[in-house]
Length: 324
Image 1 (tube, rainbow, N blue to C red):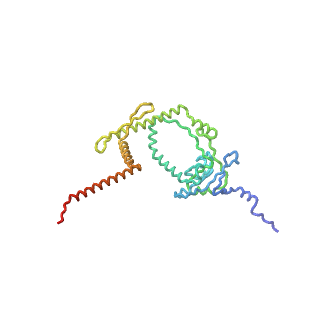
Image 2 (cartoon, rainbow, N blue to C red):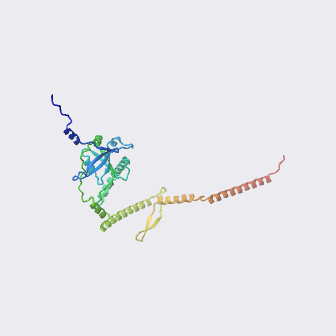
Image 3 (cartoon, rainbow, N blue to C red):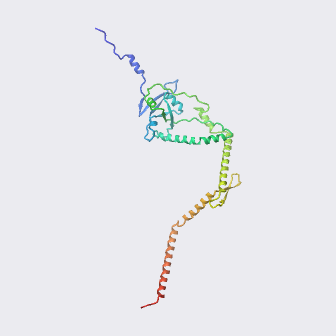
């Protein structure tokens, strides 16, 4: 008799099957993505919750199908962290939202605000560039605190194609590491960040004086420009060819001196019309005024009736009797 054949499923096949990465676990409609936070200690993991963004808003379906909703971000998350986490997949835009807002908050409202802000920035870009060229002294660079998110914050990630989003959601559970970022001197983290926050909240006397002087120079320039515009409007003639004369109001300055301010002709005319309108509105405002007005009308009506009655009686007396 021949020897029996060995079964096809051997111990090696089982080991290979165990080493094959599994699919991401599902939890409440989310895919659970574990990430190693410390290279030296792989047991320290942070769990992200991802899913395809869902919204009932009337928006571009193409963008809607390329958006990933990501929940439970670390406090120090940056664009670099997310792009490295999904390395190999094109990302067009990342929008963050703190945990203070609802998870179901409409992402497209945030997008609309950002697009409007971009339009405003583009409109003012030329103006800001002109002002920057006119600025004689360069303002000192201001150190800013690095933005940190609260616990449980989320982000909406717009990928370049629909396939990128599909591949991310169908990825296997492999070891993914959180990008290590070297702390810069300008934007430190940890205890150094608290020290920087303390220093920024208490500027030196020289910095305060410089900021006050800069503000006062801009304030005086604006006041001078407004005064010039008022004087130009004062010298204009009306439709009849007359130069409108407006009165001046005295204002007291902070140093105790008296300055004479001016008001425009349009403001004076508007004030006069407002006073006339207010005067008309006060007529018959009180109940006793309305009652007195009605009584006076009745007395006047009776007086006219008696006068007409006397006239009719007088005409009857003066009429001659003619029988034939």
